[in-house]
Image 1: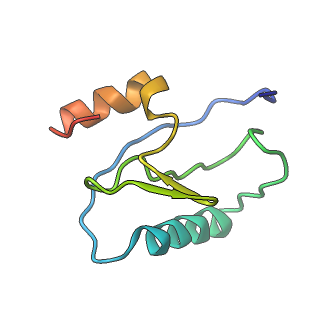
Image 2: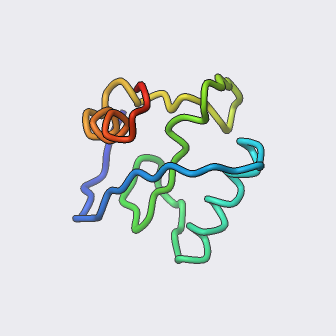
Length: 90
């Protein structure tokens, strides 16, 4: 994996309840990114906004455009800390 230098940006994990399906939530997140001016021009490239679904209850999904839990969950200590603070298992 080749990465491109990334400037500083904020990270935040949120928990929410929704009646929407995981693909509907992903579509909504992509709309928010688009409306905020995110352009997906370089894979793993710099971004101004990056919204991910880390977990979705106990669901496990393996689709080309959606993997839940997020495949990098085990590698991102801050996600694991945030989930623990929310009382959720990583």
